[in-house]
Image (cartoon, rainbow, N blue to C red; front, side, top):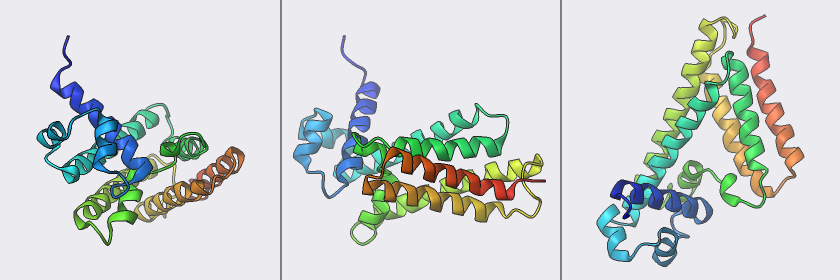
Amino acid sequence: MARSPSFDRESALGQAIGLFRKRGYHGSSMKQIERALDMRPGSIYATFGSKDGLYSEALARYAEAGGAELARHMAGYESIVDGLKGYLRKIASNCSDKDEVSSRACLIVKTLLEASNTHTGHSDQAREILGAIEQSFSELLEEAKQRGELKDSTDCARLARLMQNQIMGLRSIAERNLSAGDLEALGDDMAHILDAYRAD
């Protein structure tokens, strides 16, 4: 039975995300894209319009998946602060997989660094996504404060930005191929930052 177009598209986007996380936009040739997606050039252009269109849609889908993963993770915790601490540790644990480069690379950050001076459309998209992620953290922290988990004096927007800063830094330092123990220790240190804001 032939696969549905929507399934094919999702499968192709998943393969594109993996390739772009490893090689970036400029490092991914059309030949490599064709092999990764198992699609002919005409089919790629008919489906996504261009390499730019494919990249933009892959970036959006990657961000959507990340948001869904955060929601699933947080649903497993009664305490928002404990959930966020666990989320930071989870990211650190994922970064320790040395056999899978894409587990460490964040496509959003990679896009921002690669495209800032070469492709303003992609860099603008990455900035918007990072802003939305920061807002998601801020909203979770505000809810935690309303529940009495955080001190009333907590600046949730500022703390959300600090969390994003820590996550971006962790993914970058993971490229040094630190040991799993070192990365997990960093995850613990990041998680403990939130303890300073807990209500007494």
